[in-house]
Structures are given as C-alpha cells and as structure tokens.
Image (cartoon, rainbow, N blue to C red):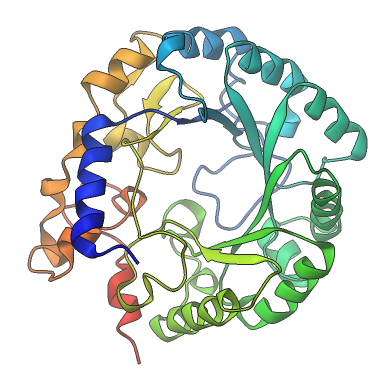
Length: 352
C-alpha cells in the first residue's frame, strides 16, 4: 500500500505536469426529469440553447494532436445529453479528433436502438444514475417510471461488452437503508462497478434535509462500502472522489483521495466558460471562455487556483492535522465567496 509521503510526491508530480486527459462537455442544460439534488437547476425548457457541435469541436481542436494522450476522454453531460437529437453526430466528430467519448445519463430515453446508434458513433463509456429502489428513485428524480427506465438502461449497458460502464447512486435519507437491496439488484444484473456519492449542499439540495446524511449515517455508509469491497469477485463497490476520508481512506476506494479538478480534468460549460468539473462553482472558479480564449492555452496558463491549494488553508481547515492529505477537500465543496469549506468529509468520519 502506498505511503502518505509517496502519495503526496506522486500528487505533486501530477499537479506539475497537469496533463489534460478528461474533458467534460455540458452539451445541454435541458432535462426531462426534475431531480431534487440538481446543482444546475436544469429544466426541459432551459434558458440556454444547446451548444452547437462546431463550437465545442473548435475548442477541442485547440489541443495539438501530439498533446492528446491515448486515454483522453470527452464526457458529455448536462442536463440530459439524450435530449440532443444530434448526440451521435457530436460523438462521431469527437472521435474524428482522436478522442474517446462517453456520457452521463439518467437513462430515461436510453433504448436498444439509441445504444446501437451511439456505439456506431464511437461511444466507449457510459454512466447511468440509479438513486434507490423504485419509490426512492422516482421521488429523487421527480418523475414516475424513472426507476423502470433506469433499470432497463442498466441492463442494456451491461449487455454490451464494448462499453466501460458503471452505475452511480446518490445516498440520502430515503435510500440509505436500501443499499443492500440495491447491491443485490445491480449484482444480479451484472453491473461491473457501483460508484456511490453523497450530496453537495448546493442548488436544489441546499435546504432539502431529506437529502443530507447525519455524520453517523455517513459512517454507516462507509462501513457498508468497506464490507462489500472485501467480497471476492462480483461488483466493485467504491466511494466517489468527494473528499479525504481519514480512517476509511484506504478501504472504500482503490486509490487514495485526489481531487483531479484542474489537474487532469477540465470542462466546457453550456455558455462556453472553461472550468474543471461541471459541479464546481462556475462563477467563482471559471478560468476563461471558449468564445474569447484558446481552451488549451487557458489549461496551460491558468487553473492555478486548482494547482496551488494553499488558499484553502483557512477556516476549519487552518489547523487541521490532515490538511496535507486533504488540501481542503474536493473543489466542489467550495461554493460562494466564503473562506470556509462547506462540507468536510474527514470530520464526518470521526463520528462514533
């Protein structure tokens, strides 16, 4: 197992090199669901028009072919990407640029015909959200029948060996006692990886108390993941890259916590802004705009706020004994103009 000292040295090298290998494209903010935890407040009739394919491809082509690593992946997100009628064409043009591409979807409109179309366009990765059993999922997603559609999408994805596929679940008050049943369901379907995350208190989720786990429930979640990662064979259960987890750090993930936002990950948002992960505070941390800036130049010459996290050594983080491992938690936990992190995962793990 890698020591903390070796890991910090590795992280420093990665930060200094800052190879861009993962690019999110917020290709639409339209969505057919009304999820309780949406940080973007997406609607079916969004205020922003879908970004034209040519605009995104133009930004992507600012990256010299020699600087595109073999594992470079563009991930289409939203909103719901499947609402774009030109989604397959977008995928084809991304592949023509020498990049892999995938998609994050709620699965509602994911059919066998759509899967064939997207595979022909070169889609290689897919993430489907499943947020509980039927009642819990439909409550979370704000639309009856969402669970059935999501499960059908999961079954279709599992049937296709060419896809790198996983399921993500947002754990909350409604579904935390369903985790064992969800595990059984996904295992029977044959899902290779189940990625679990919790709520960021932003957007619609800010004041929704049913979405937020208590510290004791968070520890319960960690224990669940820990126990299921020790099972031999079958589905890989893992916690997301939300934040540093202290005593659970080496037992609920395959690799130590590392916020890659701005280190290896960037995003092009619906209005052209250049940021890191799409759920990071776009007003506070955007680094430029593809309509006025060269995407690759911005990547190389800006993003210092992500690569030097000394500014986060403040508030509750100022005297924290694990700051050198945590660096102030994931960047998505710094919203607004405040000088304190809004969510500390390490402190949650201290609950008995």
